[in-house]
Amino acid sequence: MTSILKSEALTKYILETNAYPREHPQLKELREATLNKYTDWRRVMIVPVDEGQLISMLLKIMNAKKTLEIGVFTGYSLLATALALPDDGKASFPWINSSFDGASFYGSWDPFVACFLCPLWPRKFASHSQCLLVFVLEVVAINKILQVIAIDPDREAYEVGLPFIRKAGVENKINYIQSDGMIILSDLLSNERQEGEFDFAFVDADKENYINYHELLLKLVKVGGVIAYDNTLWQGIVAHSEHEEVENKYRDTMRNLNSFLASDSRIDPSLVSIADGLTLCRRLR
Ligand SMILES: C[S@@+](CC[C@H](N)C(=O)[O-])C[C@H]1O[C@@H](n2cnc3c(N)ncnc32)[C@H](O)[C@@H]1O
Image (cartoon, rainbow, N blue to C red; front, side, top):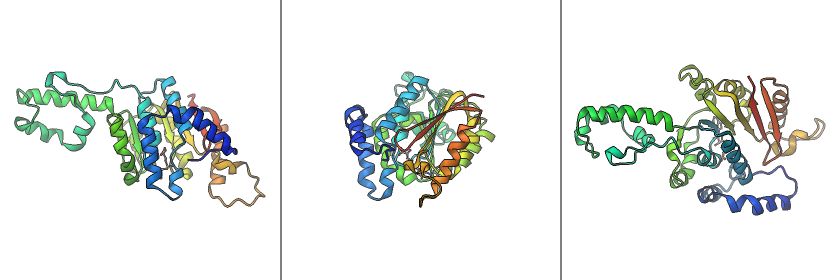
């Protein structure tokens, strides 16, 4: 966890006074499991608690329902997001006497196979046609409940946080895709026709691609929606002059991004000096 504040005492004060006391129990458990698992530089990758709070607050104010998360790691910002989204997508089928989790059903069974197996199906459908009807309704429900599309090639890291996401009861709001962000965003645009479908996107992945993500996200996120870029102040190094010796390959990447976003007339930008710098971009057109 990184903070742009140069006062350790002030960082500690903010966390201890405001952030830790209001942290969701499973966010706390996920954060602690991440810190236990990773003892090297990766332990600072999860977003700080106060940044998680800000993202959560923003999503609630916006009443966001469908979001994108690029760069999941163990899932701290993802869990904060899933917790902030409304629960209205959860599918429930009282008439088959079970509360149905469509995402895990879809992940573990081929529904067509499930339909043909319906005489053996433990939920005891009255007939094959009832089973087919359930399948159709469930596919509709699945589309509704996949509220966060979360993309990261590192599935192993996601597995560290997954037990806490499950314990928090929000796994059904997440569609985790183990892949590269650019590939999936391009696919969402060209094959899935998801243009303007998302309320919010959080980008915390490969920094050198932020500008490329921006072009795709400006199509995927609706007008009035928000795209958030993490680490845009890069430990404050962005402010070092060119003559200063700075051994950091991302200094110029972030400086270029910040200048680009500041002059992009398609968005309304705000660079917030929280955590490692968080740039919020509201899509204007
Ligand atoms: C800083 S971490 C994300 C931290 C996360 N937001 C959290 O709160 O824990 C960056 C993540 O980006 C992922 N990443 C790197 N390249 C990527 C890419 N091309 N597409 C998607 N994710 C990528 C890494 O695997 C890593 O897990």
